[in-house]
Length: 189
Image 1 (cartoon, helix red, strand yellow):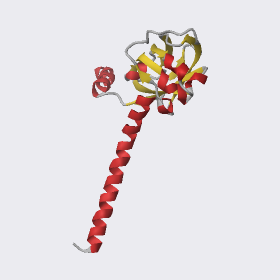
Image 2 (image 1 turned 180 degrees about the vertical axis):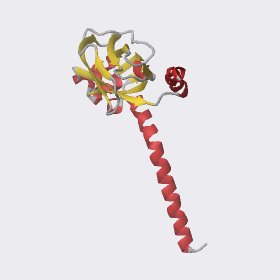
Image 3 (image 1 turned 90 degrees about the horizontal axis):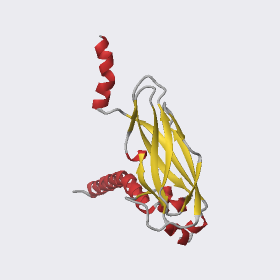
């Protein structure tokens, strides 16, 4: 193989490697944020800790929808004061004002970033896809706690307020859901 051929082969290998790494970066970054709480990603837990402190923290709730998502989505309560370590329950409401079934998935984060590694969810509507029929309104719970370790963290100990934010994105209906959606129209023909 000529020198030009070897150089071309090396350049192709570099391009393929870089493309492969770019595709792996997104899932790796997502995993890293969920494990460490970096970037405001919250953690998932099976249960609240045994230790509940007398210290409290204010939790604010925020809701939005992606451009093109037809739902109305709001927190039922805007703020809540919880004891650190205590299992708390908050609710969000979603309404589908359209004449079609719409599926949605929620992404979430907390601010400030220093709280991400200490804010844990036990159960959440955001763990699964939500499907609302035309005109349907649902109340969706999120069970969470703030880990007592936040009070000894170098940055976390200064956090007095945490904002939990959700954004709903429309997702395609599964084939089964789409078939159910189309069924009433077929019966009219």
